[in-house]
Length: 205
Image (cartoon, rainbow, N blue to C red; front, side):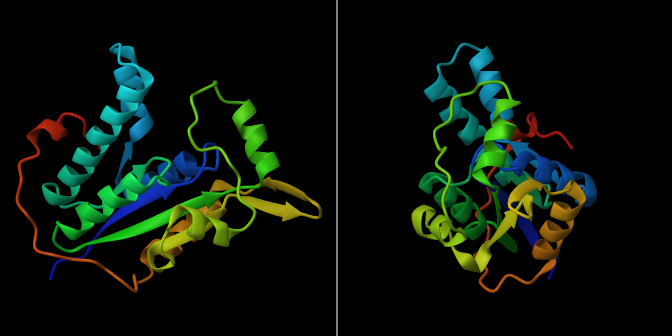
């Protein structure tokens, strides 16, 4: 059997470090990153309202992920908030319907004060999920994430009573270690062949 492919779902609140870790993983592993926000911005420029732009961005992102896994037969990283039920349902469906693919979720978490500081340095944007949770267990309970295939990655480190940004190298090393570990539960089924030519135009290696 060929080597198992991986769909990495980067999850977490805005400014938790998802895109930074996704970019580092992409550079190190040479895996494509599908950035939902990039397509959302394109739809906004084309005149779509916020709701329709976000909806269409997710549809494009899911299509591209399917195309990369099913047609390019390559692992892929999906960079989005990852905490909505419909996102988890879609990525689970993708994994279950493409042969020899596993799902790995990296949930980025950071101290609320540090996240607020990071947000202050970013351009204002519409945020649907913004509530910081108290413990790692809260993320599993509230967002229904499965511990079998989810790793919580803290992109901060505590120095005394204060929190500081963790280096990208440290976060990358931890993320890679998780990705290289065997998934205890992998859902598989024979692939259902479809054509993904429309998605190919969005793929950037």
